[in-house]
Length: 178
Image 1: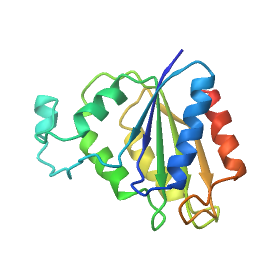
Image 2: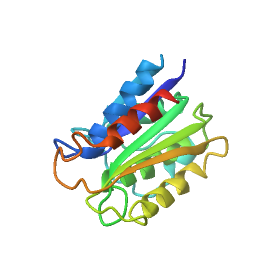
Image 3: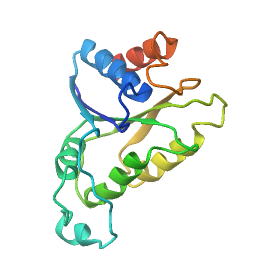
Image 4: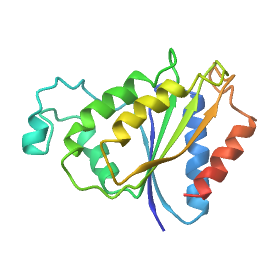
């Protein structure tokens, strides 16, 4: 059994990436894994100010929702990020959280496998590439982990447009494989 942490970064009710993440979670649970589902909706996450205090003390100067999320990520075997694609990039909330998790860099961590779930109104081959590239910048800071899979679902712009989409079953099956 693995500990799986899923971070849904969309703030929109009826979010397509959130729904995709829920299916990934159900698959991971069905395979007997322990799943922690973290939604950034309603969480206070301040912007990193680049002071680098976290590199000296191991903790950020801000006391908000990030330390608890970071602790969950550090102790996970698997981390799954879910984000809508805005202007061919990850959501701002996801980027802000990644920046704030800079305090993790000098710490030991358990996670080895990282998954990425993305959704967008566009459905071109290049649509998810920048998101994956941005996440790879974070992954490369943690030498013992790798991006195991990236599932992209295009043509889903409005709330709940993903309902009935075959990618939901793909997310479930991917979750079962962790």
